[in-house]
Length: 460
Image 1 (cartoon, rainbow, N blue to C red):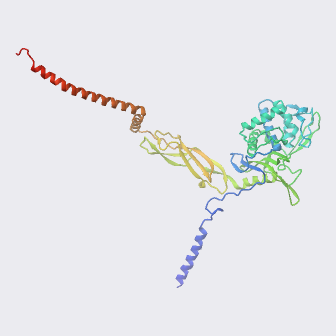
Image 2 (image 1 turned 180 degrees about the vertical axis):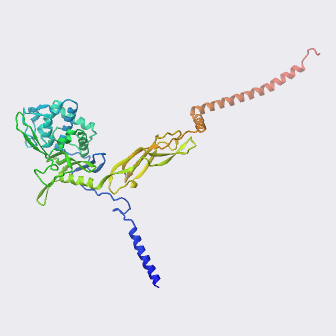
Image 3 (image 1 turned 30 degrees about the vertical axis):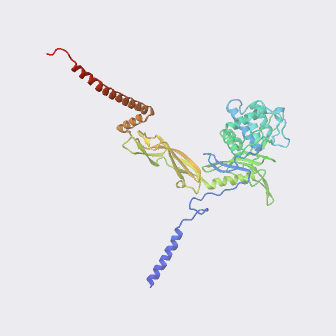
């Protein structure tokens, strides 16, 4: 009796333990990787891109046309640095502010107080433009690069098209509101990425404070960045020690905008926010372009990491081979692939799709021949595509190749037509010969017989 009771308790415990061993289902009720939740960034448009690979980590209305405000100055800086790189300007070249460059600017817009006739080197004008967002510095640089502000604006739009910007049109070099002056988060990323290729750009954009030397019309200027992620000299609560640059912008029509970058360990991101609000929270103002940028950075840093998803030595599959005594060749990836992925997603979770260029493939095959591609994806998102290479040589068999060549020769339409014509001619010839033979037989035999009967010649 005690033995039966013991076994009953043992079986009950085993049942409970087996229930604990059952894997938990994901949030959608199915077993699988746990992916990060949408952070729902509070702005009209937002974008977070891996700076190393170009992988989009988060996107919201990234192609919507919106007003960029002073984010425009990133394009102005790009064209200026291109002119310097081309030798058209130098960073130390002095430029003088003209009346045309300073005309038409809003009196309440961002300014470094540059006056008509004041001379300042290109480098200092870039600091004025990117650190304190000086509108007049933009137009001075525009005239120096293109000869006039209008010509510079045309160059801005040409450059945007060259970079692949499909939702951008500029009307001025500074970002003052104009209904025909717009861009998108994605286009702003493309422009920023191009500007970041110039080291001077990030050096200037990542400056929290600097002093501009005295000019012919002004003493020293102390400049403090408008980017609260880099400095808390005016406000508190936004400082982000992982952030680097890049540019702020705000108008009533555009809202609060910010392009930034940040690095933590091996991860680096570029962010874009357009159309964020300033709200009051518990009696304290919150400029969401800054707070939401930091939240978006944390979303990337906390939920994504680099993972190797394919090894170049891994055999993927055997590809059938014809014209050889060896009936297959094994293929492997052309290279190792490391991508940015959600922490909960692993290489084994990815769907593999093999596309072969020929199936089967004809011998000969040489080691390293590209025989197809391998696509790795999850839930419709493609993480990588890599070529598949032959792992070893496969020699062609001479007899099999000869037999293939013979079949290919006789499978040609022209050869088939020629054979049919020859057969028809042969049949016609045989019929003709047959008819001729019969005629000779019929008439030739009777003529010969008559000649023999009527012969009157001399017999011997």
